[in-house]
Image (cartoon, rainbow, N blue to C red):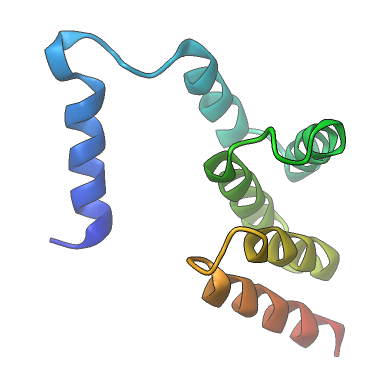
Length: 110
């Protein structure tokens, strides 16, 4: 079983342990809203949160937000570099992904 499959099963069992959902409503609402938000709305929210308090937004939420924005705007070199810079702040776990984003941005610019 690959790591994502295993993580998915672990998440499901943790959320519904004791037949009671364990995800706070605010986190569930954030995930639902960001899933269907436009790249512009995602970036507005992330940039606003980071401007108010650079460390307040959890890393998992930042990663998700930038990932979704990059998927919607894969040819936006500025966005790719912004996402890469953010990943590098919380590495080294995501350094390879950050380097790939930087390489893609460089390719787009040439």
